Length: 360
View (cartoon, rainbow, N blue to C red):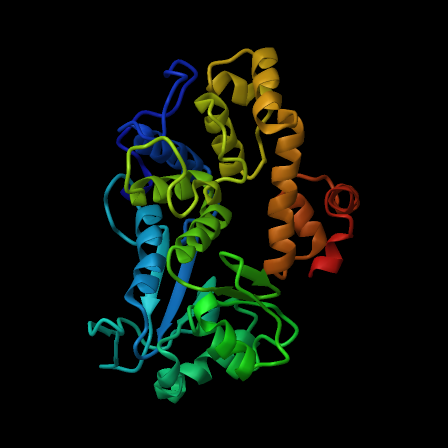
């Protein structure tokens, strides 16, 4: 497939070591890194697939906040083909939902088997209209949850998940404007108004607004790699200032806040490979530093050695697989580069204080 090849040269140790996230070739560099990773990818299906259910009077910003990061992460350069991220707005034939701003959005897909998606998203509308959605929307939502597909409630989507009994034993993330309404409607459910989003046992809630961008860059980082997340953040940034954007560049990589662009590149490289098949010496060479100089700068900027960061990156990916997949522990151990499940469990317990199975 031609879409898997970048028109730009691959990264080598001879390229300039100084590169800013605001320079024109930053996106090209991220695309090159992605292309290199795709060359050895074992599975060429979409890295991230999302099904969307729209409630009447849904906020348009929440829909675009989901789709636009996916669009930028899905293809090279400024193209918009849904190659490596895909999204579908589902509904019965001819169904359309009218946004709170009055724009009508038609469904572009039927009710697809929910297991074909990595996530099913429900975008709620104005509170008086929550009961006005097609009954098939709620039926589909329950089927998706029963099938073990993670379900995301956006804006008043948290109310819809609660109405369907899908937030039992979980804490919801609610916009402060809706806090009292949620408390009255669901007095036994815990909720927070201080988080961008909450991920708890197969349910994700996000209050909407710019918070949806934080969530989407986090999901893209997890499924597609920090290079794709970094591109989405860069393309959606509104200013050329060298500071955090309104929706937090930190969602692109775990340790994005570093002023040394060489260390930033090293972090992106390590996380794009999820810590696998990469050594501190290789990364040092790619960013144009000696191993000793790289180790010192990495420690100064990140607060740990490159070797430790690589191990923790692998463990973060391992925890994600434990919480969001049905893979056996041995398979997860092999996937993240451990020789067996015992070594994985030991490292996992040291990092998180509990054995992997306690997170499943």
